[in-house]
Structure formats: C-alpha cells, structure tokens
Image (cartoon, rainbow, N blue to C red; front, side, top):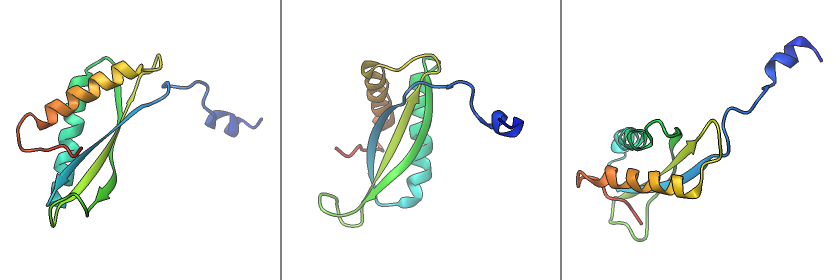
Length: 114
C-alpha cells in the first residue's frame, strides 16, 4: 500500500454509534433560526456535561402548512449524541433529550411542536 493511502485511512473508530433525536419549534421568523439553534446546542451541552459528546445540532426540515398558524414555520432540529468509549443506551439519550427539551422551553419564549 502506498504511504499516502496508508496515512489517509483511519486506524480506529473514534466514536460508537450515534444516539439521534429530533425536536421541532414553530416560529414566524426564520431569522430566529440561528438563535434557536445556538440556544438548543447550549442547552444540550449543559445537560450532557462531561458524560458524553453532543456531535451535531442542525436543521433537517422546515415545515409550513396544515396544523400551523398562517405565516408560521416549524423548524426541525436533529441532535446527535456520542460517546468515545461505548454505545450510548436509549435511556441515556432519552434522559438527556428530555432535560434538554425542558431546558429550552423553561423561559416560556420557546414552544416545542409535537
């Protein structure tokens, strides 16, 4: 094998399988997207602490239509949790997700779409 190719191949996996969750927020102002994403990431990181890592917080869907007030869009975020040394259990991911959701709506300014 060429030295160049050999160097580009990973020698070990750095994380186990991801634990993924989604959360949707209705908004009538897409400029709030950045602020919601930042607040969600901050809340999730605070809840996770040093127990494991928050890998990705990103928008994966924007919905507008039936079930939402006129002019309102629902932004759906994906959260990815990881641990370097093990596979996270459903209970671990669910507990962190529930606490993150509670934290993000605690100020009364943010609603979660169910």
